[in-house]
Amino acid sequence: MSLQPSPCPSGDEKVQLFGLLLETNARLSRSLGLELESTCDLPLAWFDVLLQLRKSPEGRLKMNQIADAIVHSTGGTTRLIDRLEVAGLVERQNCPSDRRAIHVAITDVGNEKLDTALNVHLGYLEENLATRLTKVERGQLADLLTKLNETR
Amino acid sequence: MSLQPSPCPSGDEKVQLFGLLLETNARLSRSLGLELESTCDLPLAWFDVLLQLRKSPEGRLKMNQIADAIVHSTGGTTRLIDRLEVAGLVERQNCPSDRRAIHVAITDVGNEKLDTALNVHLGYLEENLATRLTKVERGQLADLLTKLNETR
DNA sequence: GACAAGTAGTTGTATATACAACTATACTGT
DNA sequence: ACAGTATAGTTGTATATACAACTACTTGTC
Image (cartoon, rainbow over all chains, first blue to last red; front, side, top):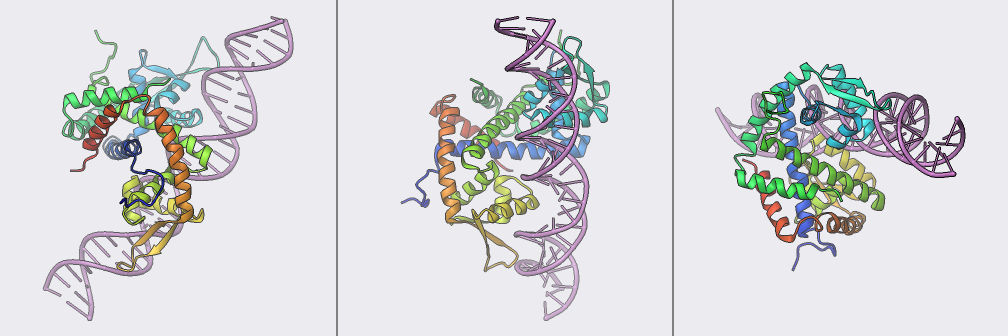
């Protein structure tokens, strides 16, 4: 007595879960993106790049490390970094040990911008994460996502 | 004795979690998208639309319901449905009770395409979800994401 | 029943991203 | 040392999406 006339289970538990992941991500990214854009004039993709740079040990990464970290194509990353560089938030530096490679380093301006954005981001998270999930639940979610994210 | 010279906690637990969500989603969408595209010639966005239509009680939704379900702008949804309609996978129908509205219904061709894609998707999930998370963990993840996705 | 306000969808335009082809450099094996 | 292969990044081009302005219709109020 199913409403679905199909032979294929669109209601499969894994299919649902995947859909949920897609949807949750899309909603959160969109609302955070709007907030960062309106308050800091900083697109989410830029914020992501700056954050990756700050998380890196030396405040700089090679192009392909950035592309991998933010899950973009290398071509897309070139253009993205172009825009960030024009805006003065990052700078390209030659890599002494490999003349093919480029180091992308966050600038002082970029650091300031990131600080501002991180404050907005923290407020956003306080309002949208912390009100929906307890600290324990957030830990569980982080564990599950980490497992899901593992390469093999 | 922190490596981060910044006053702002890029290492904050919530910031990390959000980043993890973004990254996990991006990796999974990308790999599934490539797989669906190469095996079924079906972009992930199209698959998403067809799936939403099948999940709906009558196999049809209005434009704005689709836009909301797949988290796109209404303009973007118009263009997306245009392409699906040209491909013969969905069809626009007038809504008798509201002449502004449009019903988008999945066609027979669309249903067949979706069945094929769902099989690929299930294989993908078997390989990428089921190997990383147990059934219990998947249930936990679904619960957490549902909470996170709740509007308020 | 007419006018104001709200809602559904489309279209013009700008932009961001992907893919594939390309250049330049580095590595590897003989 | 050289040839062949692999890697880092950029560029040409196509496409998908967003935003804002627009049209058409509906709903509520007087």
